[in-house]
Length: 327
Image (tube, rainbow, N blue to C red):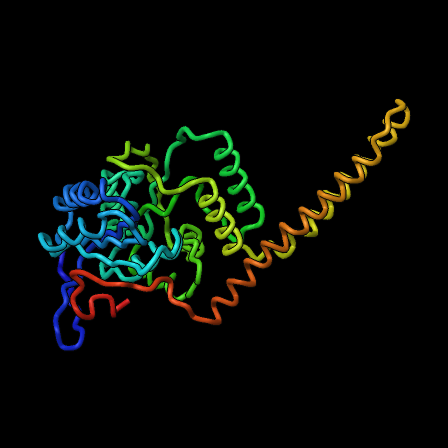
């Protein structure tokens, strides 16, 4: 392996072979452990690498702990956002700031297994552009399972390209993949979908999520729902046709309800009023749902015209001048 050196403003900056971007928020219990795990996995297989933590508005000692690691190890870098910019924009901004010839993205809470990193690097060196970890089936609540399956079904039906189920974005991306996605200038980047959209070669590795070293997931039902809706709206133009399909199914439902009313009349039951109310409410609900999805797409168009940055940074630690200017 040969080290690459890029020149910025007259100063040499060593380009790492691999940059590991770790998204974090309130991970004081996991920050040191995840950094140690990543270093242990990459030191035997990489000639050069760095670790970039991007903190998304932590309210605990996460930033303080990572700064301490930065002081002890120059390979560890830190970006601190001014506030919480969401789980789409913040990790993507960190990926864009990475200087490695390959970029690995993962979370700080050990939901992504560090033991896969050497295999990521191996497959990348063999010529694969994108290597993704795919979670094996895991226990979750019935409601979350239903919502997840519904999200995948809607994306398969209406999406412009098929995403990989249970691939959260944890994986390795070649530099040209990152550069291509950055040029798309997406204001709410659904990164796992954009990876597929690029058309670059993809390899997957199934894995079982390890036990967390500490803390708990920061996601709840509403954050996951928001993530799914943003991903669907941002990766599908076919949604504009969706009201036509809905109108068709509502027509079938109306016909079925009319048959039910006929049956009720023959059996001496009065059900016309609640059938009318149910149909009226259902049509209003579906109308507002799709207006909301269309509104999300209009909002994305508005954001593109504003050219708003993904995040605003409060500070950086251990970034040499011009480190990410090549991206």
